[in-house]
Image 1 (cartoon, rainbow, N blue to C red):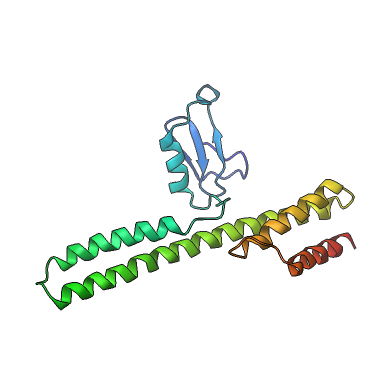
Image 2: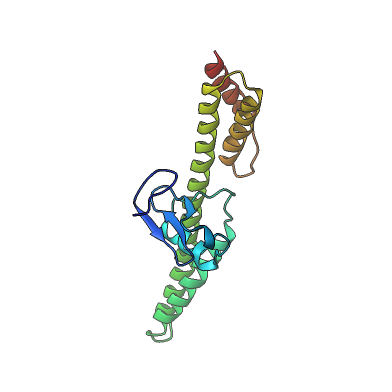
Length: 178
């Protein structure tokens, strides 16, 4: 039985290329050394499909979900409207589909943005934990500052960092270092 090399979980999925994906932590590793360079597009797609916990490392775009959901809603609305006679009912169905599609797309965007912010927070927490373990290392201090700035900037739409954010990072560092 194959186990994850990172978390020792037996809850893994084997791909045709010999690559194994852990369903718990998202780790991807190679069971057979001979197939190391044979990663296919299907493997990448299945990795994201099987493990939705794969972190979103870049700020998600709002345009794609709005367009995709808007187009799907427009097509579905047009299909449903085709069952009605010309007149007011068709116009109402078209209007409802134009409103609901982008609204659903915006909800998907907010979900992805939340995952992105959670990823940034987890990176910041890891940097703080590493600094707690080794408080004399200057590179860990710099890493904590960088990760803190990335996290706090992810909370704002314009990706800026404020004086209050810098103060919060400074307070965290002072609490860790004593």
